[in-house]
Image 1 (spheres, rainbow, N blue to C red):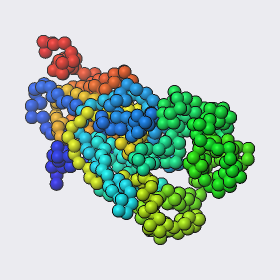
Image 2: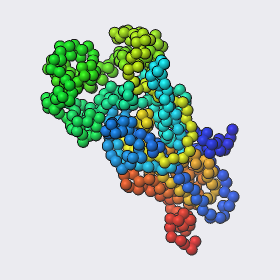
Image 3: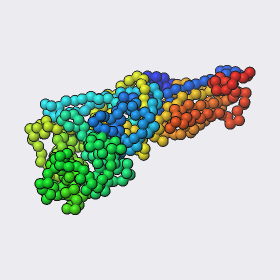
Image 4: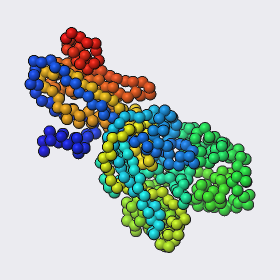
Length: 497
């Protein structure tokens, strides 16, 4: 197949965009009218980066009773706040600031259809969900336990496992207030403070709504202050709690959150009784101890998930190991292997989040309004529970109309090649001024020096400021030819030329 035939596939969506702009893509052909100073005008109105559909639910910090799955990105336009993301290095959730949410344009999109499993045995059911985004948008794919890779949405294949926010779901179908085993409000408060909570500190919800994690509703109190606010009537704790039993269970490996659920009381009640009687590990210490031995951490994580109710089969898929190895790990960590009946009974009383969302298909989905946001100090955020990549360079989405006007000399640029070249910037992080100059100089070289070349980038405003670079080549242009081009592009006053 010739290069020209390959380029012709672009309109059919079969051509893969390169990851970085390549000037070698630019094809040219001879100018048959070198004596005529005619102006060629080219426009590319779909110069855009990574964006998601307006109905996409973003996992922002909010009141979970009102927005259990998150808030549509189109409703976040003009707002600032915090959202949940995921750190690929320590495999833990994080909370980061977001801002600059806005509509970035109308673009071609693809629809990722996903399958998630619910229940077990006869109660097993499969639910489908979708994620609609631009074809170049990167999605995090699991390539093994604690191993990940970024894949463009259009390149996803059936059977691949995507990374989810791993929120636990109750039997009633409602989300709990924990994400990957961590309390949401603790993650939020630590992000606001910029540090981990001290052993003597706890987070208090001012309005008494334990689901409302909006920063203004949270405050940090000492254990004593927090304990005094939560009376017996609210949390139902009992002074007859056996402190020695609490210490034994805590030192055996149960967390404060697990103990509070076991004894049907608030975590602060448990913590207040443990402080001064045993060493309270901080969250960072727990994470460091887990990471100090990857093999031990993997075995412990397997046992933890099995104790929650996940099956041997599910865990073998999740860790990408044989089921016999899963059994070995469970026994090695002191776990008791359940019978099929015990597993059935356990799963009938608890609803667990899926370990992964499995790709069913990726389809072209027409044209749609798309949106994006800037997220501070991270490269990812959750969209419809799926971890997607943040935008490159400054983290801000780009949408622009690139207008090119030139008077050819020896050669002209081939339009399909130009389109492929311009679209190669979709996943390339570079400042507006650099992008416009790169395009101008690459075109000037490919066409072996046109008589005059003007490139303008009308970029979508960033933070309320429009950046619209104009590049003119050569550096000492003929003023008459320049006026002709500007006039034809409606950028200058009419002239008699």
